[in-house]
Length: 156
Image: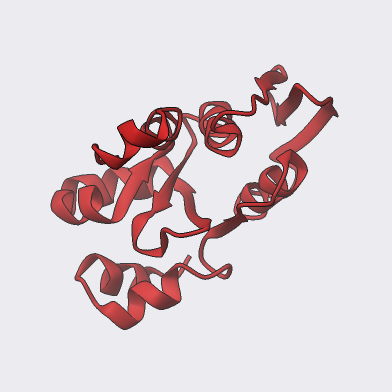
C-alpha cells in the first residue's frame, strides 16, 4: 500500500483520487464479474492463500479464509455483487476490512482492502474524508438491495 498516495487522497488531491481507484491500489470489480472474479480481486490484496473460493454453485459459494471455518455466501439475483462483497468483508474480519472507494463509482467498483489498523487510523485521523470517500460493504449491500426508485431517492 502506498501511504503517500493514500494521504494525498485523504487530503483531497483529485489526481491522487484518480490514480488510487485503479487496480494497482484497489480491487476493481466490473459489473459483469461473477463470484470467482470478485473473490480473486479481493484476495489479491491479502496475504497469499488468505482468502480463496471453495465450492461454487449457481446459488452460493464457499469463502475459505485461512484459519477459519468456510463461510457460505448466498448468490441472489438482487444485489449479488454487493451482497458477496459484504460476505467477503465479514469473512476477512476482524483482521482486514474492505470498503468501496466512492470517487470511482460507475459501472464498476473500486474496493480498497486494508488491514483493520489502517482503517482505524483513517477513521480517527480523517473522519470526514473517510465518510466522503469510502462506503462500507454493509452500507453498499443495503443500498443496492433497495428498488430502483428507492435508490434514486436516497444516498448510500
